[in-house]
Amino acid sequence: MMPWALRAGCALLLGGALAIAAPAQGAVPSAEKVRKAVAASNLAGKRAQPLLVEVALLAESGEVAATGQGRLDPAGASRLDLTLADGRTETHERTGQGYRVTRGGAPVERAPELLPPVRLLLAPSGDALAAALGDLGGDPERVDLGVEGTSDCWVLGGRNPGPFGANALPSLWVDIDSRQPVRIDEGNGTHFRLGPAALQNGVRFPAWLEVESSGWPRWRMEIRHVAPANAAPAHTP
Image (cartoon, rainbow, N blue to C red; front, side):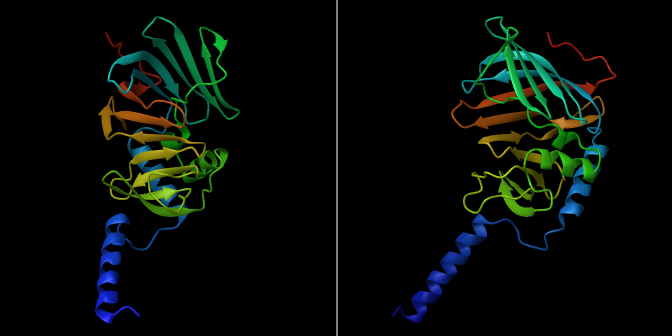
C-alpha cells in the first residue's frame, strides 16, 4: 500500500496539474445568459449588421496567397471573392444550404473553408445566436469552460473532454472578461481562431483569423478593412 505521505504528495501534484490545465472555476452562467451577453457585445461593437471587408490571405510561409473582398450578413448568406497570386479568381459562399467554392466560375469539389460561420459573430440577439449555432449542428443550450490562448472562455455549444485544442462539437468560444469571440469550432475538423478586436469605421471586428482544417495547410486571413455595408470600402492598394 502507498504510504500516506506519498499519496498526499501525489494528490498535490495532480491538483497542481489540473489547476494549470483548467480555466478558473466558478458558477457557469446559463446558456441563455451567455447568448444574451454575446449578442450585447455584437451590438456594442456594431457587428450586428451587414459588413464589407477587405482581406489578405497569407500562407504558412507568410506570403500573400490572395487578396479579396467579402460581404458578411447576419441574416445568413455571406460571400468572399478572392484574387489568387496567379491571377485566378476564387469565390467562397456560405449559406444555410452549406458551403460552396468556385474557381474561375467552375465548382471546386474539395477546398478548405476560409469563410467562417459569421452569423455567430454578427448575431443581434440571443435567439439569433441560438439559431446560428443550431444550424451548425451545435447545442445552444450547453455551456462549458475552456482555455484558448490566454483567454478563459465560455464555450457555447460545449467542448469534448480532453485537450482543449481538440473539439469536435460546433461551438463559439467567448472570452469571459471581454465578451469578445476568440474561436469557432465547426465540428467537421475546421477551427477558426480569431485575433484581437480592432476598431474600424465604428465596427469592432477581429483583426485576423486563422483557419485550421483537417488535411489542409493553415491559413491566416488579415482583415485589412471593415465597414458597414452601406458605407463604401476603402480600396487596398
